[in-house]
Length: 623
Image 1 (cartoon, rainbow, N blue to C red):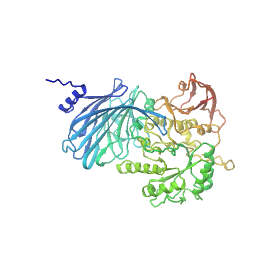
Image 2: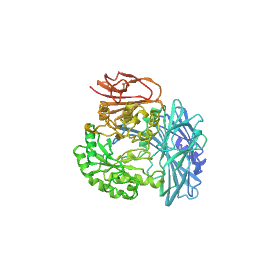
Image 3: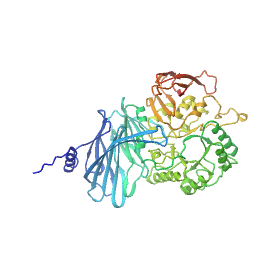
Image 4: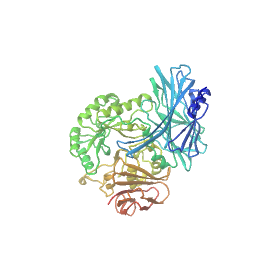
């Protein structure tokens, strides 16, 4: 007689097989803080139900993973598999140089009862930063059609969320039960004063975009923009739950979105050069030369020709293969090739705006043509988003651009889901209520802990226009250029360089005030990032490191306050100087910015007063 000893995993498998997987299966994060208890059933509309706990506190109860796929209503459990990963990877560029990637994974295998050749896989991961899942449907041959996703996230009745209807709309705080329409992702939710989560989507490449739908209860349900189809295999994007003790801690963990994407597929990335950008609005040769001169003198790497250089951007007949100025924007003349050549001499590259109407018709012609001209990148305008068709088109366009060594900045309603890891020529995108909308400082602070969890944002930072006063202060603009991460950082969006002999004192003329040294020195990508403090609406302070220097940006939207920042993040073996920019109405300059310099080291504490609606910017560098 032989005796077979069953391991705990084998016992669990037997129970699952015999009981229709009614037995709970547990998945924990590598650090042991996150526990997910999963239960699988047979109804495709709610194939997995689960509870999530973090350090003993409940995040969700009775959340579910489900969908409606044609010809699949009932599934039978087959098996499950576990996997663990503990590694790290180095970014081409980013908010930090090295990103940890550690998770435990559990994949459930099901078979369709209606057609056993159809398989369903649900993969769940517990990271130290949060929880994520995706689903996969496969069959030997034929079209798979997904009509709905029904995954739902259930909250306590006291939970509140910061939501916006669209990527560029106002963000407001609501109780979960008050959300009765679709809202953008990510959604940041406050469970209590010491527990926050962010729900979002990662790895969206060839699928319909997801938003979250409030149904009048305490749940948010995944809502797809359109039906999704695939041949043989359909793999969804990841749905993630980022978990943290504070809004700032959420932002510090936003690299989880990148971890849920495929690794870099561009072998040679030397041509991918982040930097600052200055918009060229005159659309003339003379004006372009002037813009390039200013850029070269102020450490700005690119100029960007905005709409109008090839005709009316919203016309289906405008031809982006040649210069044909929109008379409503400029009378010219514009010799683009001469401008490109002049930029080369000054080490300033040229980026072209192209509206989606021309891109959709001409992209395969435009990319090799622009490469032959010496163009460095494209700004995609008014791209279509949401459906599987246009999601697929856009990411294919990014891949095509990489083939011709073109940087990409996607504008309007597109929100990132981490594809910059896979194709890092996608440097930035809009999908934000930026300076074109004149958001107040409180809205910008909330944006940091909602929209910026998703990734880089082209915020169109400006400095010399009247709208600056609506958005906080001049130092607020300095600080925002650091706080709102974007590898392509547009500066002076509504401002323009004017020769001294031609200055009229009109709004928007760039004045050579001393604090422009901040913009001149400011990098756009970083070796490390720390969120020193943060409240969803009242204040936010971010410190970023590049080489041996640190930069701090702090926004204050609440009451007047005194800040005390420890410099313990500095190297213990070095002495530093700190240049501090603050708002001060008594300063006799047009922008009222006070600049002070102090000596600091790792034992120092930076202490200063900041008024409501004002901000602080600090540049710390070795002596």
